[in-house]
Length: 65
Image (cartoon, helix red, strand yellow):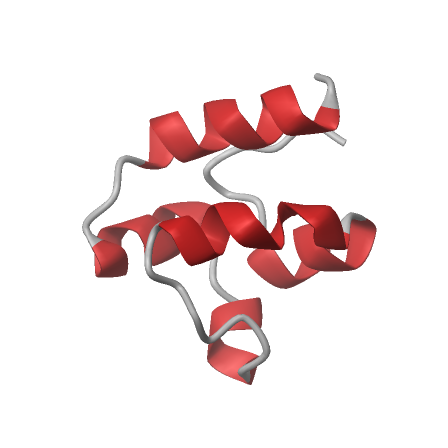
């Protein structure tokens, strides 16, 4: 899976739950709530004041892409 800023967080977590700590790092502690699962990475980063490009890079590196 290639992660982009448009990747939906719930889809990513369903594919590989080991990415959860990267979201916890940015202060996103509500990973189980329906609205968080439906957000894109870009939307979550905007809400949490984090650089989406940096998070996408970390996630892709973690996933081996």
